Image 1: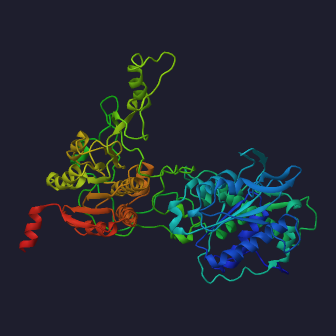
Image 2: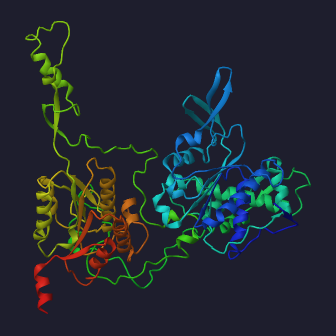
Image 3: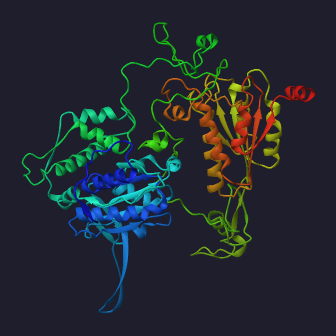
Length: 630
């Protein structure tokens, strides 16, 4: 990589993305703690050039001559464990050709620094995700696989690319392992250009550079620039401080003090922290001391007086007869204008280094193990065992009943020392057929206060009864729910389950977590189509709601209210969850939205049906007759 005389590391927020990207890569190569670089929306045609530049920077930091890079390993959706930890070798030995196993590309104990490239992090295989979580930011790593046992200190750097819209598909544990986050969506990204001579000198002496000292104002400034939430951990503050330390070393070299001795060292100040925040486009700021004045526009509807007099289920008054002041929750009471959600500052996903804080729902229960493969054949045993019968073949045998049948005739057959099983003694299991159809009901209890909805469910429940379909009920906004801000659900094997009748007669509550209910229904349908033992041939999703969801999805996941006015956030989250269901692309899934016709937002159920790619059914026959008469 050619060098030039000087280049100032001070950059503005509007500088070209090539300079920012080069600065971030130099910081990652210079600082050992910055082991992972995640680029959002990088065009695929630029990945090869960025990889070559990063490999050259890592080579110079490792003491290699200029132009020599490090070994690169690419991980994708087809990567398995054997590709990561093992490397088979065929050699000629004294007894002929021998097959041996050596440490793989990720076991860099002997090969030195290397670069791991992930072209699409959202589509990385489960073994690759597990390796990233194990190695990124770890002090030591251990692998025991197929007779190979190694323990080493990971020194490989990771370069991953991910689209902003795919962030919600990635586990937060995996995203947390990448300390350097940078958005590079500019399709006009120029070549990264030559490396400044002072930066090249710092990289050449990366292992023997001057010591760094953190000023007293560095830690408070780092915590001030980040949101002081309790669920983000300490990885983000550490990453910001390490980037600031790398920028301080680059400034120390540009000032011409690198060759004056190392007694004084490099001082990291709060200015370096602010420049590190501008480098990764950290837009979040500290919370204001006083709550901001309410802007004119949408407000959270107050709880009616009738609901204040009757506390929610599970609420017990304090001792002494005095009940604590009730905390108002989201209520679908009187209609209020629905407008855009007020967003402080620039919160667009492309401008944030942590877009997972602003995008939709997170994958629940994401496991870092490879799912078991099922081979669906003609003789696959399915269903629960309901009895035994005389076996007609050698598939799905009942060994205990077979032995019992043979033992009954042991004395007649003259068997003394051993048990002989004759062909007529073999017994097999009788299994109940697995349901191949499923009915999923999303029931919004807050929309049937003034009408009877039992007639609406009759045709759908009758279809499930005739076709022997399984039933899954998702309840939204019911009185007596385990948590007011979350949806409840249960699975029934058939329509004869008594819990279905209880669910349809439940009284309405105060909150409407419609987005969480649709998100649960989407998970149920996706899991049924992918992991059902008997492949589903048809599924029916019925959503009975007025579309007025007043609980955002983030509030349901946290279990508590966050922020101020809700505005349209709950409705937008519900439409986004419905869009994920509608994009499943399966012809076996049919979606129906039952419109109760509540005023004034009569168009919300139709918007929900459009997102589901389904149809709308009138919930009140009398209202439909009036409309037709007009």
